[in-house]
Amino acid sequence: MRNYENVIYAYIIMLLLIICVGLFQSWSIALTILNYCLISAVMTIGANIQWGYAGLINFGIMGYTALGGLAVVLVSVDPVKKAWQVGGLNILGSIWIIVAIVFITRFILKRFGKSLIRNYSIAFLIIAGVILIRVTATPGIEAIESVDPAVSGFLGGMGLPVLMSWIIGAFLAGALAFIVGKIALGLRADYLAIATLLIAEIIVSIIKHEEWLARGVKNVIGLKRPAPYEVELQKTQWFRDFIEKIYSNKLELINTIAQKKIILNQLIIDASSIFVKLCFTSLFLSVVIILLIVTQKALYSPWGRKMRAIRDNEEAASAMGKNIVKEHLFIFILGSAIVGLAGAMMVTNDGLFTPGSYRPMRYTFVIWVMVIVGGTGNNFGAILGGFVVWFLWVEAAPISLFLIDLFTAHLPETNMIRSHLVESAPYFRFLLIGIGLLLIMRYRPQGIIPEKIIKQ
Image (cartoon, rainbow, N blue to C red; front, top):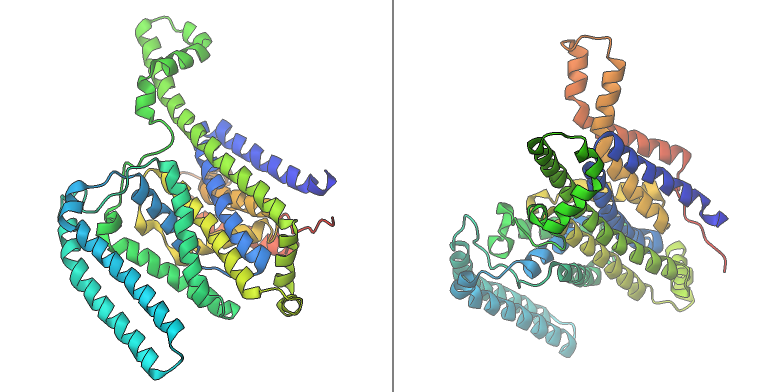
């Protein structure tokens, strides 16, 4: 128990901060912050597995997050039948051409030795394949995107339950990580970081511009979710009776029936939002707890000790017979799959897919700040870092506005300095996060909850 005292205290403080938001702002805002903190925690667990366990630098986090979000569209959205009729066969044909190119290239690489003929053959195959794909796919894409482009213009999905998309999102991210890992994991750390960042930019760019796939920058709205909609919940009799029973003492103080009805309706509207957010909280918290248990077991297992040995000294681990490339590839896939899961969770929580919001150059480093602030190599620290940074990101503006009002209360509202500070309040998040990161790097260079090796 003593080994986890700092973890317990840190998590209690975070819980108290969430409660303070609920008391002084609203419980709806508090639960919204909590849900995004939980999603960020899943992302930081994935990043921490790669960096904290194996020392792999992956700056392509937003690419895998976008793939997880894309999975929600491809799995849960109902198929657009007319789009499939006019262009579905073209897309399927292009996919089979890609599969054929991959298998033929693999056959050539295995069957023939290194030579100019082999290289030219593969180059010719790829060029011919790209031309054939373009000829096959272009008419179908144009036909698909012309099908009611204001509300549709894409193929849609499979119409399956949205929770299944979380698994598919993790699978897609892991599959991409396998391809990227095969190509890029042999690079030096700094080149690996650049390569993964550029690959993320390519993925996001493809999703943004291929409208037939997920409407591109037009966005996909009204996605299914594993919780009831607020409007439907407000019409449900059991929920109305439940809220009326909870607030029965408050409603009894109201004399007029009309006023009582108005207040009850408002209470039901507010409670429906909180109830839905609590449903999401329970789901997200379950995922975080499961991942935490599994990753903690893995961290202190023989496999975890092997990964830390590879991280700390690759040459020594290789001399002991460990396959460094194989282990790096496995953990790269595992961490990316978890990030893809987080991406699917985020889109499910939002209820819409917005490819334009994925900015690898910006948000990738926010996730890395979370991992560094919490404590590299410590799962509890990674989760806490997600909570701390996201809480500051959301609450920086309200906290700054409160402090500005407090210290400039003696100045008139028309004062130039006060007006400038109030207008600049939303940008204080960058200042607070920067100051916080500097303080932690100065006084807690290993993070709030540093890595602790428990001897067994």
